[in-house]
Length: 593
Image 1 (cartoon, rainbow, N blue to C red):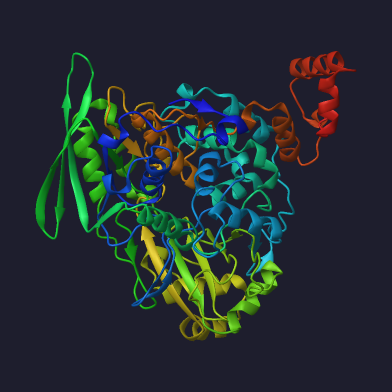
Image 2 (image 1 turned 120 degrees about the horizontal axis):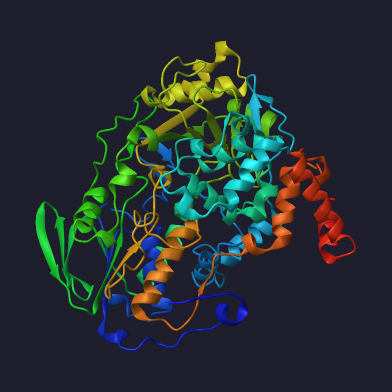
């Protein structure tokens, strides 16, 4: 497996890998990474569909990329996905996946046309004082000291950030900035999360820093993530003859490990189905792909009248048990305990609100300054309630979000970062609230008169809360080796997939990361002779770096930054040296001089 960039490799079709007709694949889980692996096996590996077996514990594909009309609860989405134009592996895949809505076009075609015709941007990024615009006004509001701390983190080597938290590299001055408000609520970072992960995000998305205040860098699907991404992949794989086995819980993969050579071969796969234990004997021609860990493991659902009841303690959950059993066999298989041992620091809660009449949408219009029923962009990303005790954010994407959604109903997605703190209207922790109570808290922050809040939450909306104990587990402080490589050293028929597998330079909690690990896994195990698109190199592009610096300084020039006397003199000397050069032209173009 090797990395590439440019059209030459992007448009090429690889030859059929040698020996692929004698190989089979067993893919554990049917989430985005697993489905992507199956798609790459079919398209680029040219493996026959009937030789690909997807073993899924639940009765439906999609994993964390869900979205459904639950007959007992109502519409529910645990989360949503924000996409970027430089998700290179994702777009490489979706150019080949047919739309389920429009004959003759791909999912990428559909997505590209939609976001060209209806570009995303927000008209209100944050509110305070019960629905009033917080007037972040596109500003980052970084002090010189805070900007310097960001620059220092950006330049720090990975090894110096092992097991460090964000609190270890920033102080309170930084946390008071709009930059942190944008950053924390968009990506769901907490102060105790990994400084290394934050650095990787800064480097990965430096080309989009200017789009943080109003989300104009983002692109969204037409419908919820299941209907827009998962369903087309499932249809593609079913048409290829791929074998889907639902209700199968894989409990272990047993390896034959030669300690002298380092060779590791998956030899047996253990599972349960309908209460019966089973086993699959594996050969070197049987490729095994395992999604290790899951951010939505052990999700607890509530409804309009009931709060979610989390039934697990630290580290519990089927996906963690599977990874632990695999990891116990060799250190190269990672350290799951680093990610799943502190539910108090890895949880947050979301809620899906379905408005049932016109009463609530009027308040939405007032804040987002758009019609929720126009069919186009509504909030253009999350609206953060700056003074919320739960640190609540909410969003309304293009409506309808579901194909069967009744006309005149809007789907709203809410999440709260601080689930153990009391609300401002509902004086309870979010994690203890029913769907109706969460809706009441949201309506309070929309500015609904207090004497109308209960009636609207009970009769004009249906709210389904979901508590996710491990939703930010991948952000916990870590070091090299805690996440196993996609294909661990010495493995010839085994690969890890998803958010807890390690691939260089890319960032977790994205659709691209899941799909990238799948592409790398398939290309490595089958020796596909085509390059995997490298992570977009904006971190190495001086234009992107200058533009990001200019935006974060809110229009201030380099001369405006206060530095200690020796550094100030050095800066003046460098600027003088650049006079009349291309470098000076670039600095002026990006308004740094």
